[in-house]
Amino acid sequence: VMHCLRAAWMTGKTHPKEYRIHQLEALCHFLDERQADIQRALCEDLHKPCFETEFTEVLLVRNELANALNNLCCWMKDENVHKNLMTLMDCAFIRKDPYGVVLIIAPYNYPIHFTLMPLVGAIAAGNCVVLKPSELSSCTERLLAKALPCYMDPVTDPEETEKLLENKFDYIFYTGNNHVAKIVMTAAAKHLTPLTLELGGKCPCYVDRCCNFQNVANRIVWGKCVNAGQTCIAPDYCDPVMQEEIFAPILPIFIVRDMEEAIDFINCRERPLAVYAFSSDSKVVNQVLDHTSSGGFCGNDIGIHATSIALPYGGIGHSGFGQYHGKFSFDTFTHLRGCLLRCMGLELMNKMRYPPYSNKKLRHKA
Image (cartoon, rainbow, N blue to C red; front, side, top):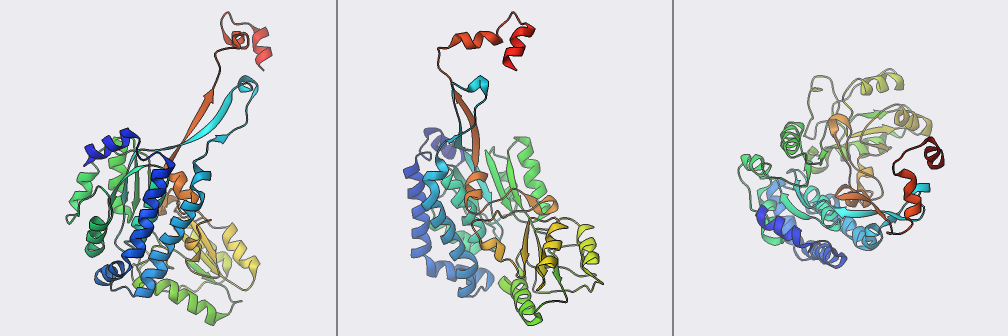
């Protein structure tokens, strides 16, 4: 499989704009034509309601695809850059090159979302892709393996992931827990492979005295219970279970004296994937934003920031590194290649840098 992928990459077939658009349109057709199959697979894997399947998985991928198709031509264009005295007569630009053969490893909790969202960016950037869905969402895995024109085989043994990582990839995109992330990062280090890690953590939510508590309750409970609580950006804080992420619809509560204590409480722990703050006073929300660090931030709601293709989505520190969604997905799977084109003439200007050296030449260059 890897040999075939590498050979396909070497032909350059994934580079042309037309090919990328065709593949993205094929993904659109997959979502349209296999909607019932997707709903059935997620119901069997996760007992997920059809509404949640559409709202939290399929709709977001559709938006990602539409955005990529509408903007791909602009994203792919060479970007001209400022020139200095040495390069004034040259052509200097940034070329947006694909990395090559990339690996996307997805978790079980949002098997369509976390598999296809990064896939959109990888295809838009012109890469060849190996998809590794979670074996825990086996029905969705089989559906993707059967329906998508990807070079992948259904995997039922968790050790297969480690075997897959023995191959040399040009980029790895992993979504999941910290334990497996360390395995992925160790494997990537053997080949000096760049990667993105989208992890989880414990996402704090501060509720101020000054707010509409009914609205707050509605939004927090929805954010915690959607997808049966198995959401990496769900609010997740309490005392006895502060040691690891709660992947369930359980919402423990801490009572603090004031906002300063809440901020100190947040900052003495690992940086989370998201921080939330509820208050009718915008100064309170902004103060929590200014004095905490996290992958993302949402004021007066839960998780909605992750639905915007205009915002980067990703972690920091213990919650991962790298980002995607919208153009950030394209950038993640793109190598920015600095290019300078110079003519063979004008050698007189180059003589200033040739030996014999002198202070006079240095002054001219400065």
